[in-house]
Amino acid sequence: MKDATALMSEESKPTVSLIAPINAQLLQNMTDTISDSPMIHEIKNAIKTDLLKRYNSEAEKKILHTASALDPRFKGLPFLTQEERLEIYRGVTEEAASLEVISAGFM
Image (spheres, rainbow, N blue to C red):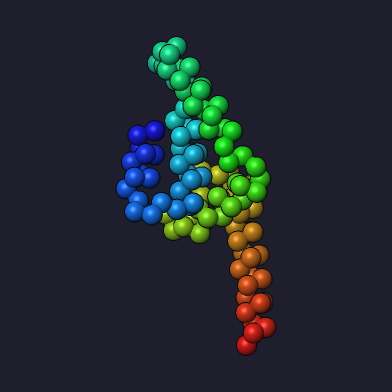
């Protein structure tokens, strides 16, 4: 949580491309470990439950993942599965191709 807060605070203009990677990192950090006390376990579960309610519609995910794919810092999309990565890059490629066709019509 501290790292996510620091990252967002450091950015003079935080962008939408940060949301998905930070959310994924926070969810990963909320995984229980053997050394967690019962109180830590409860806190992690409460945070994880709250985070899972956010940005979970397909439309929101597509926007957030596409924004991250277009940001050089996250272009590898390490927080997504291989299948999700391919789907996002397919969408970006199709959108770029459609823009190329549109711009060619104006020449």
